[in-house]
Image 1 (tube, rainbow, N blue to C red):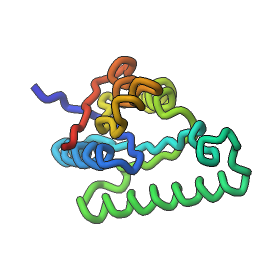
Image 2: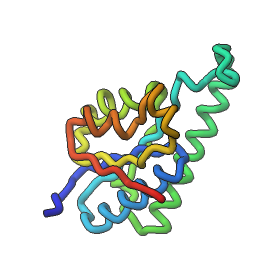
Image 3: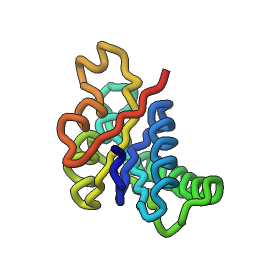
Image 4: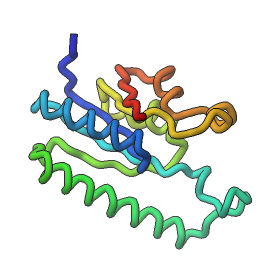
Length: 153
């Protein structure tokens, strides 16, 4: 039986899995017109270094990255509202810095009290999942709400 979700969170990172997760979120919101859609992009602070050499980006580069991501999220919001005829007052985009696993599960979801969290299945290979783990696996194990993992082929 499908629950009547009120506050849906979808995490996006530019991957194919995240795109499919967003498509699932849109379909759920369209079936539940009273639902709010939170779209979250987390910029991984551990990835903000030159080529994995441990050299942090300078403040200007971080600001440039933040501005580009803010514009991307603003454009995404506009596109979704216009293309899918969603209620603009019920679609919100968010940008955060941090570890995506902990930001999604321990910071954002409890703060916004989302009752459904949608993530894309991992785009990482087996070795990457073994070393750092996938965001999807962490979310499934630790989320305080229902989780839908959108798979892609």
